[in-house]
Length: 491
Image 1 (cartoon, helix red, strand yellow):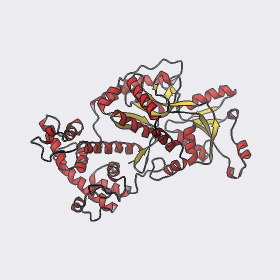
Image 2 (cartoon, rainbow, N blue to C red):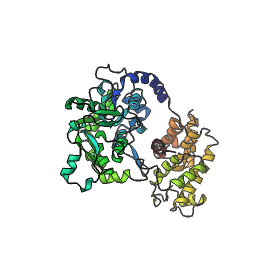
Image 3 (cartoon, rainbow, N blue to C red):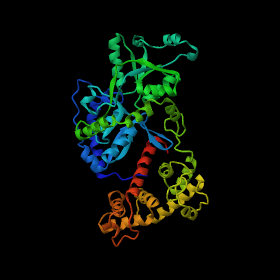
Image 4 (cartoon, rainbow, N blue to C red):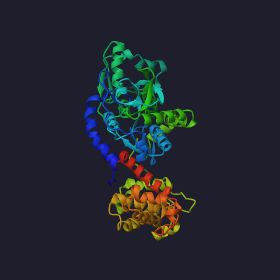
């Protein structure tokens, strides 16, 4: 299902073609999760001019993230991750929605940023002089060393500490002549090159393909298919909880600054992020988030090994099979229906609202009975009745809203607030010469306006007052989560 791209975004995407041509010469290896030119190269010419004011006008912050245990992942239907949690707080602070774009390619992330396809790269970026030529870094979140990832020898549990230490690389000189695999375009290659100079011998550096993320290389070390890789110690310690057979205690760098990156011509956004981060670090919230992802190995291990985590499985909920079958009847992508069910009940079949709505799809008993459910606490009955209601709404809106992707928004809003209020908003849109078949900025706007007397008392309005903010946010949040599901869970 394809949703309409606004005109501003379309212009930015066209700009990407020119920006990509320039970036292909400038974006080189450097960065924990980023790229940059060689120190001798000239700074890249920025093409896209899109700072904080335009971000607020658009109404969304577009963040480029990494699909990892600290960047972005799904757990029981909920997007999570150190970077994601902070981004959600910042987006709320500046009054916009958060839009996520996930990529495994570091080179691609920088192309996207400078071409305007994203506003901020929220990877764990190491601040270096080379990278400062093409991006502006925020104030650092924390500092971290790069460490060597190596597998402990067979039978390590029965070894004494002294025996184990002797079997591992503890002196970096021992890496001379050894193969160390690193993620393509990461800063690890640069660091290993410098280390080779420092220890007076060549380390054999093998750059892996773009799609091989740092955590994938760590997994390969744990499985024994490669001997060594490199990671930031924060990421390394998290993964050591998953794989007790790896050792992550040999540093290969001094502490380095870890930060986000924005375009160099976005000073307003940079200043806003820095001011926000400075205040956040004074609050307990930052430490809670940091400890949640970097200092809680048991919780991290539980998430990583769960079938309901995008880190280790392809399931969103225990009800996926029922949801897939129901979505087929509805003609929706199953991940869209899953996103709606998460919005309604967080997949809790025992959920009950203050208004008396019950079960996974939060239907009131009268509606449930009307669409065939005798027991709304039963997951299958709840989903079946909810989908029948959605089909009913879809058939009604199909008479006036032709485009399927637009119609989904009308259907979701009607499910949340009632058909009558959305019909009123459409009539107000028609009266004020707006497009009654378009949701964003048209019917959506007049649903918001139905909380104001001049609008809910208009003669075309039949259902009276409505607090339109709730259904508008309902639609936005479901579609935003659906977009994240599409990036992290296969169809």
